[in-house]
Image (cartoon, rainbow, N blue to C red; front, side, top):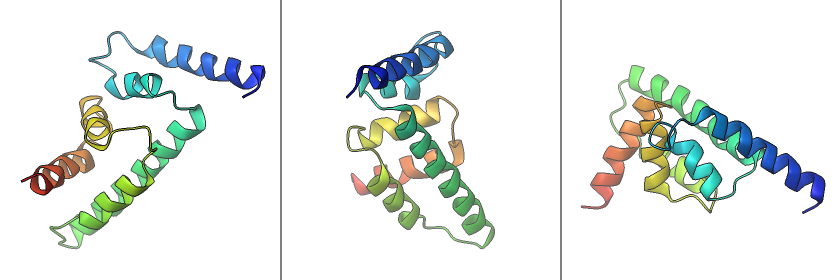
Length: 113
């Protein structure tokens, strides 16, 4: 990684930290920093969540009650450094994609039984 890339990464982390009063209020950003994701990697995750949220809404309107395919898409596309359950919890706690993350938490719980 070049010096310019490292500086860009540090600048990105600083901008995220400015948004954080405490990690409890911005747990997803705390995960991003802890696991060393780049701005592009975070944007990719957020974009994925936006797409899946739209699909979730459409499927709910169509009467779907099982959303395993969306969960599988999320899990397989998630950055390999991010723990699945911790990421879902952090996104929900930070009030990002709450209906989708609530469904994913339910699926996780079902899978762990």
